[in-house]
Length: 88
Image (cartoon, rainbow, N blue to C red; front, top):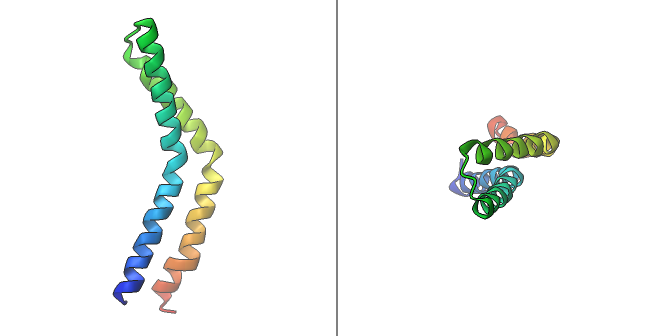
């Protein structure tokens, strides 16, 4: 395998990883900022108040975007990885 093909495949794989992780990370960031602001305004310093809503929001976004994630990974493997393995 040539270096150009290897590095291009790695670049595409990293970009797909960013695209797949972006919705969940964005929701975690927004939920963390919102809950942190709420805690600062109300002086409530409960650890479960930050953890449970953030995980719940991430699970909902994961469930909603699961088809997008699966389609993106399957497309990457069928168009890029499998032809490299097959040698074509």
